[in-house]
Image (tube, rainbow, N blue to C red):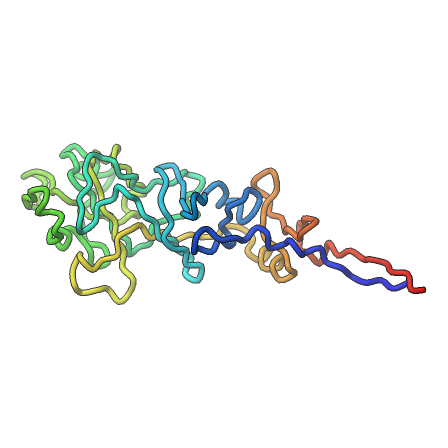
Length: 268
């Protein structure tokens, strides 16, 4: 009798897939049970368009940069250099509290809030501090005012002194207010831009518009590396919390080597 080790890993990579031309890999997934549990029910593929869904709404995913752990998102109701969208229709960016440790816009992402009320929390200050409008990574409203879109809405530049009325545009970093909620902030619209070094010098017309989000994998990274090193795919159990190594025809709480199957062949 010969004992031959066999690994049931022929379908271990079934979790990994594509949506259009975007690769879906750990920690993300399109199927429940695959990827990291903190990223479940997050991505959806509709007609080869990848969508990212959180509490503030749905965004089109333009890119997933696995090397730098970042996503680039697009909100169709977000203002750009060519178009100002008013009426509070934009999503902004707000994540569920339990996801907050996994997702945050990058430090070089500026949010420019447009047409905010004088009663907005932006101008009333937060407990213990006053929140000034300011540039973020060299990007701010002074440059944004030069965009052609402002000439279409009859832009009237307002002084920075709040006593003379709120500015038409207030640039903030996400970290300063933790959520971009147009209703709570009493704003008519917003724009978001980010810089990828080196920063372009041709003004707001050369900025990259969108929301650049840094993601962070919380939990046991060693578990996933050991799983993938043995031919498995990282996933999680029915409780939506505990990680599993998916090894084709079986799941393991460690790696695919621990689920080794011996097939006995009789030699005549």
